[in-house]
Length: 356
Image 1 (tube, rainbow, N blue to C red):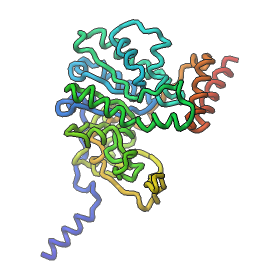
Image 2 (spheres, rainbow, N blue to C red; image 1 turned 180 degrees about the vertical axis):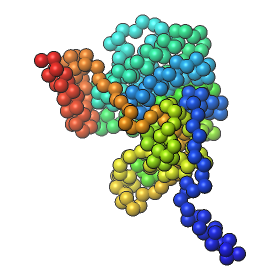
Image 3 (tube, rainbow, N blue to C red; image 1 turned 180 degrees about the horizontal axis):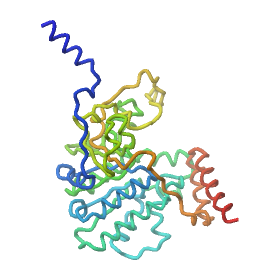
Image 4 (spheres, rainbow, N blue to C red; image 1 turned 90 degrees about the vertical axis):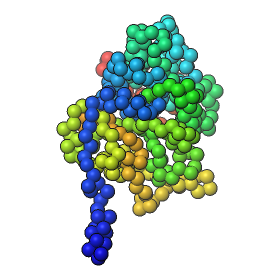
């Protein structure tokens, strides 16, 4: 009996990865489509500005199996105020460019990051796919960013009212347009919106401000979202991941990757608690851990960090004085760091210097 107790104690003291099998990755597109067999919504991380993630998304959407499986794509990089515009464009109608570009330019995000060319390329790729499909099988893109009206934004407080809706609005949209209509949707958002427990809140979810798209959908009914996070440094947890085929998809529950602390998959900063309704930093020694398998379901591997490249703004934006003025005004009124305005100015100045 004593020996059994000693063995049991030793086992319980082992790190959670001990005895767990390594992940066996699968072909990425097939793996994602398989996930739709038992899930109405599959969430795929949008690594903002990352060209490898963008190319994978286009290859997924262009795969003939995708439109045969999925009805909708819900995206972060489009203003819900322009839903009618994108519906008409994706049906193949003629839409003036100045009207079309408001889809991605008029989101709640004031910085020029909204105008990376990969966003426009995505919408044009879906339009091209739809052109080859019968009307009843055409893909619909649902614009998930709240329908802010920038003409009415006069202060940081005005802007923040819309920022606070950035999870609740798309969650409600998915409930009404996807789940209630028994459709299937690919959700393409930044991974912060996919957290089941918010790392910034130290994994406490009592406060409404800690909720995410996924937590709101899963707590409101029987729907469970299959969440896929992008990750570039898996080899630190499972060494053979460095030799995985690109792209690869790996479901993590019950594996070495699933047992690892979820915080190892991202480098986010401080954590906060609430005191009198205001955020207060939590000391690092009080930070909680959470197994990755409780936070997300699978990882998409697109190669190591050293192989990643970022999309760049079109030089044409810098020659559009009205556009630059609009961006600088929105950055100023929203109260985001001046560094965003400086980044745009520096980029445009560097292009002007090259022309000289």
